[in-house]
Image 1 (cartoon, rainbow, N blue to C red):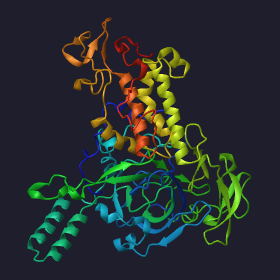
Image 2 (image 1 turned 180 degrees about the vertical axis):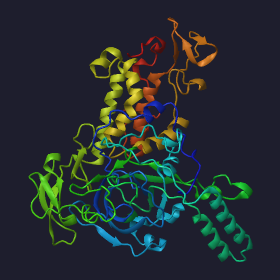
Image 3 (image 1 turned 45 degrees about the horizontal axis):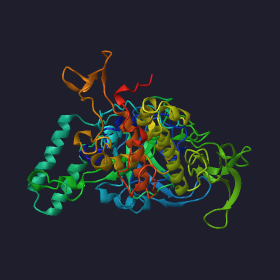
Image 4 (image 1 turned 180 degrees about the horizontal axis):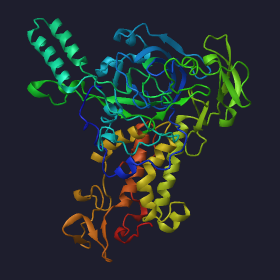
Length: 560
């Protein structure tokens, strides 16, 4: 299993924005976060055989992750640190341009730490490669841990492209039973009690740490990964021995790490047990990315001894030209990448050696380039599709969501004309429920839900206020259903009965909508881009609710 830590470290954002923050609505079908993944080659598809897999991936445009979680999706596809072996890693380049490739000399940690992308693992008290299951990481991400159960992630059904996530969430498996594991641990502990030197004790403690670890279907690769960068991994793992016809598959998600500060409370007898505790935050799209498989490459297992086992996973090389509209990559003896159909132009460029001419795909500046995967160009950058830089995207996001705020502030009649629906009633409901997801979806090359979570920890704890009752501490988080005009329902202060006898849970959606938009402005400010129409740093407590601040919210009809 991966290093353990408390799950409560990053739960502070869960609160008034929870309904908008947790559920994914209306996402585009193509990720603009930049995270892509593709299986380029399988060396051996025989049941239980050792398979050397070549896999390309790209990291998010907007963040440099501390690690990449890579999980097998075939049922029963498990491995441990002894059988998951990294053979090589290429850093940089694209589908067409060569990056810097490193062959990994051996399986020792020193060999892995010699690879630039894997350096820095020890600063997180991790080894470069840790093996476990997806729950070991996602269970320490606040977004998932609040409803965490070992293999139950109800919201994770498909990735951003609609690929099903079947097989990602598996349970760890031990090679021996609990009694044997206990006996083995007791034997090492007994030796530890007799050890006379620090060196001997260190060796035994390391042995105890490694003892009885289960196998899993995921590898966590920790290091110093760059943002918006292509990597090509070559690694060896055993195939499952389940049944011929089983399809191999892989799923990835970039991860940022966080550790408690030096002032974290000590453990028993003053031990600094939290000093090495780490929590994880998924970056990019929260559902991760299912790796595509290069056309003509098979990922289907065959019986041991099948003559196709070592050839079917190699793919068919494209020696000549690709079809019109595609650009030919030289990699793996030639394969084709979609270009013109996704907005690009087929061209040529010199490789990193400054001599070799390569066919490439050039994307227009308003489309996000993809350095890995079957397409060279991604989705448009920003809600209008016209932004060509990060700064332009921030300005576009600011203008777009200031427009939403303006439409919401002017009231039902004008708000409907402005495309915001029924003002306080349906407009506020829609904004409160969906505007954060809409912001992340429109700007995911710049921000992700982890950015929202980090900002909201500060925002929710110290920046909420209700301008309709600015001096009333009970109103800091908005109007609650305990006013004198509302009939109590058996004394509960979270529900009330209206004039028609209907029992409801009161939600101050106008308050939630206003502060959701202000939070967006605060996130842009933290990213280095000011948006005074949503969050004015010179007047941070400016009116949030606009012209309808004094409206009779209790009489606003809920949308049908």
